[in-house]
Image 1 (cartoon, rainbow, N blue to C red):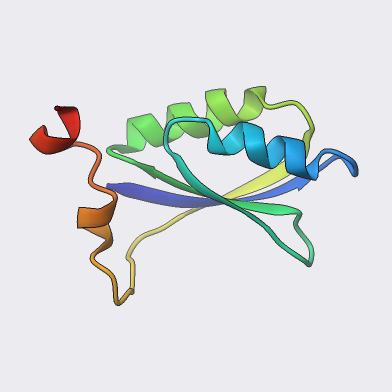
Image 2: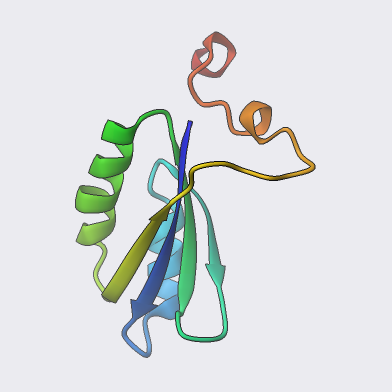
Amino acid sequence: MVTALVLINTERDAVNEVAELLVDISGVTEVYSVAGKYDLIALLRVPSNEAMADLVTRSILEVDGITSSETLVAFRVHSNFDLETIFDIDTEEARN
């Protein structure tokens, strides 16, 4: 599983619309509206680096209203939750 966070700025009146479009893209598991330097943070989880490259450079770039973004690829997760099980998208059970 490859995880990334995408820090996103949008056009002033497009924050909610962009968030709704992003969360409908396969591989985008969550989108947070935040205060500070960025407007949104999208959490991405996909099975491979190749899938991440496609998601970031194709699907997300097609969303109108994004003015800039910065992608942070996660090396390791530190969590009290079993995230691999929660977000396992490449198992036999998930395919059925």
